[in-house]
Amino acid sequence: MASTLSLLAAIPAVAEVDIAQKDSTWFTDAQAALTAREAVTNNTNRARNVILFVADGNSIGTQYATRLWVGQKAGGLGDDHVLPQEKFPYSALVKTYTTNGQTPDSAPTASALNTGIKSRNGTINIDDAGAYDSCDAAATAGLTTFAEIVSDMGKSVGIVSTARLTHATPAAVYARTANRDWEDDTKLPEGCAQKDIAAQMVDAIEAGTVDLALGGGRANFLPAGITDDEGTEGRRVDNRNLVDEITAKGWQYVWNDQTFADADPAQPILGLFEGSHMQYEEDRTDEPSLAEMTEKAITSLSQNGDGYYLMVEAGRVDHANHDGNLHRAVTDGAAFAEAIEKAVSMVDQEETLIVVTADHGHVLEFNGYCGRGTPITGLCYNVDDEGPEHSEDLAMALDGKPYSVASYLNGAGSILHQEEGSNDYTGTREVLTQEQATDPDFLQQALLPLPSETHSAVDVAVMAQGPWAHLFGGVIEQNLIFHVMYKAITAGDASAAGMDADTSADMADGAEAGEAMTDGSEAETANDGDKMDPDAPTSASESHDAATGETNGSN
Image (cartoon, rainbow, N blue to C red; front, top):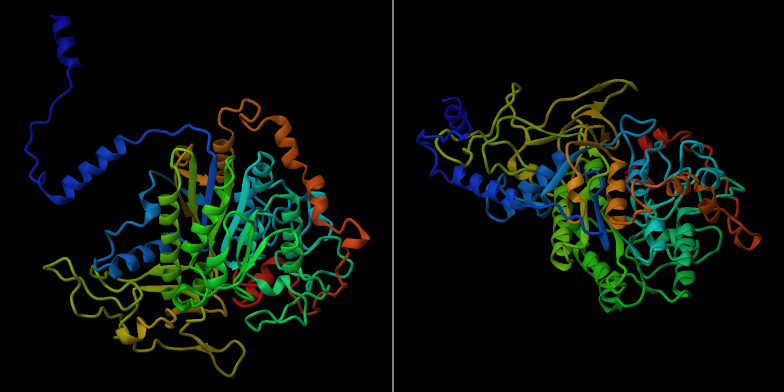
């Protein structure tokens, strides 16, 4: 009798309730999605290639807005659209704080992705043993980069960015600097041992740790007094023409759509498409899109049978958020999604780890109870009680005025304006029309008056597919992303398992590698010794609080 009861207890119970909603499309779609998830298996191959996609400043809110923007432009309501990276099977939330910043800037966050440790705001690939603004930090506290590790394995390294190639995120692939604003030699302290970031790219090319670079920032590579093909004057005061130095090493130089299209992917390519940052996607003319640059980079780097590491940055998502201009944030976000889709279509997913993330977030938030299909960059329409799409009635605040779907907590769109007194700020919200709010140049209404909208400390997302992508899950520290990439390229290598003691020591000892980033000989001391601007900010946080998009800011 007891054995019979035990047998009956072992038989799983079968639900006999008739599920009323079982024929609903929502129900059947969810069941299909569940079946697809059950079929996903962990890929434990060694990765031949790693592609790291970083949308600078792409907060979860910004990605949400991009999803709706793309979906609505495709004729849908937007909410149910799925971006290419959102189809990846593995994801996690990422904590972006730094060793001294609850809210980070892009320098230490990019460093975390490329070195596997956290560091302080304002510095790139420098351990905290090296001081901010210290000319010796690169030599004494420099960190080993992922690019150096993979190039030592025989792999190629490529950088693609819509920002300046000397800006924080792309610079973290190849440079070490105690101040992220030392993009060219004009801001280096007099007699500084560290080279500027642009000069460090030349060294990285010479060392074989950069094999392709496409982005903006041409002025940082040209001497003052030299005017480029688009009429922009160079910035360097050391009289070095870094473009000429790089092409002398056998590289091709491209600067517009035509020269880019003509470039031979079998040869190294330097692309500098603007004097400063590349154009927003909304305004882009005579320069390649992020997807086109990604395609060229993969085609070029794939010439190496040992594989490659490619970092692709949508740098201007960040800048549009700083400007308080959601339209350009989502149009650049859409271009980022197209680049991811292009990469996915070109690679063997069994041997290529693709990681998509952001370095930090922004203070973008969403208002009201808007009906579905409400234009994501426009004013909020009320919910229609009878149907899926919004009503035609604009939602109103207590001041009797309509409000936008999205707002920034601070920034140039503040409704508060300075009156006669230095601390006298007053204001009221403008009565907006849908036409005004959906204009590409519209700045979302904000509260705190600041010249540039700030970053947020809130977690960002990481999404991944390919070898060892299953290691992403839950809530992780940002520097773990490096370690997953390292695991993927060394899987099966007993000497690399668990980051062996010798490797750990090498990575902690950045001094030897950092020596290449200082002026090691009199022939290399090209800095004219320009002194720092006496009015320049004295701390990393002050520097980036004061920054605006066209100079060294938009962090």
